[in-house]
Amino acid sequence: MAKLLLNLRNVPEDEADEVRAWLTDSGMDFYETQPSPWGISHGGIWMREDADIVRAKALMADYQAARRQRVLAEQAAARERGEQDSFGKLLRQRPLYVIGVLAAIVAIVALTLALPYLFLR
Image (cartoon, rainbow, N blue to C red):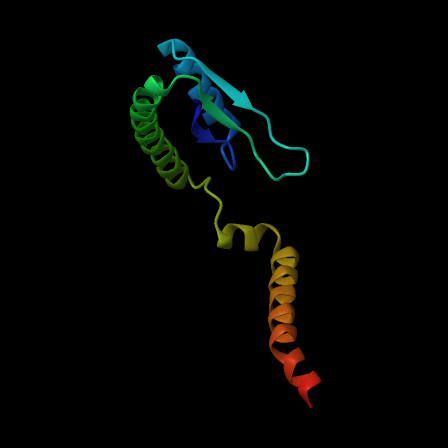
């Protein structure tokens, strides 16, 4: 019976490609389900053989640990170069947009808190 190895919800395409590549290289038999047109299911990578799932999960844990270290190193390098996005950087680049979004958030919160009291009177 097939076992789900990786749910593709919120998985970047490069990560899914890397998982497919090491599964193919390791010789494990897998298949992929596509996302539903209505967004209910986001697809997944499934192992065909029950015996492969334990090995695949061990490889997946190693892969995710290595990917995490690589991404953290890339973020640290971007931060050192001053290329990482931040609230301050966005505020300097697009002040009207940031102020507009903050005003919309405040308006929504105010309406959410005030409307029940206005209708209860």
